[in-house]
Image (cartoon, rainbow, N blue to C red; front, side, top):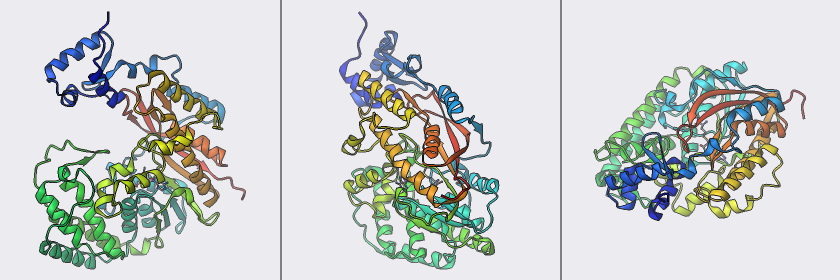
Length: 499
Ligand SMILES: C[S@@+](CC[C@H](N)C(=O)[O-])C[C@H]1O[C@@H](n2cnc3c(N)ncnc32)[C@H](O)[C@@H]1O
């Protein structure tokens, strides 16, 4: 008789699903001594009930069998099918694309945004496109403005859409090259003097605030926040950005890329006032340097803090679009930037956070009621997507142990969200204009989802020609550490004849 997993342990292992938990995490979760649990887990592993992956992560055996299943379609199959159906083989892109490459670069460093791509990637794209000075560049998911900053620096008009307010703030501040560094430095000094004179204010609504900061740090942060000027002039916004950028470095959290605890220096006092002063002087310094190249700047850019599905630019007004959309089953941006949202006053309650999440491109944390209208699979036109959604649903039904039983609905909504953006960009592009997207694939509920190839197909469906699909780098699945995923540059082109 094989040994079965005790109910408490089964529940705990289900919570982390294919990501797995360490013995220490399970011991804390179950209040059971670690050595005892380690022996039990080894025994269960011998009976094939649990599996150990990567660096000592345990998962239920249900989660591990994936590529042994007959119905599992792996990345290669999709690549071959894509080549057959679209006549395009995957190429490779040799340049660097991750945001870590931006962390020390002037302007880009003002608000390190881990979900971004590199400035070098963007300028490389401009070079390849041979863009004439004064062209209009659009980024429908502008994030903290990497594309827009590079566009303006290269002499182009930058237009961006970004729904998450702190990211839109960062993008606005970063493309306003005209901000006077002297005035900003003076304003920063005034804010600090005012903060010192104030009493500590009330913390934001987030339940975890007291855990996130040491008490002295928290007090100083509230003083600093309450001293920020309320206006929306570019200098005011720049000080707000400097404050927002101070939050994570002085907290017990880190963003790598998801927000979480586990910093080795968590209990060290880091002074928010000093951090803020440093941020202001860094921004001022970069503005001074930028000012020297004033003659080569593009015209003032524009960031619309609104939904990319509602892009409403004059037809044919954009020469090039470059972006990186959220990935299928990817980052919950609202959760990841909840500190910035709460401390900067963009969200005043958990309902505000939920509403923002629901307005954004679908992520894995979307509420069940929002996903409910998207549970049917037979009305999906794209044959690939229909098969994939059905496979996800079958796997979930079969195992009943995935994190959410409506995962296929989340994926369906994701592609429903993406479609109007592609359509709107198509309309806004001039004939022959290109749309370059950096997209990832995913593994979820035991199903491989070629997000990049599906995006290319969607592009073709709204009228684009698929010009190329180039793999830029490998990355590893969060669900199964040993499963290689990729990040790809999909290039779509609007036909040269108008219409
Ligand atoms: C991968 S990030 C873009 C990063 C950007 N390329 C950069 O380098 O900074 C995707 C962005 O899409 C934004 N987003 C999600 N849904 C959106 C929507 N419906 N409209 C506009 N922006 C949205 C997210 O807030 C996030 O900043």
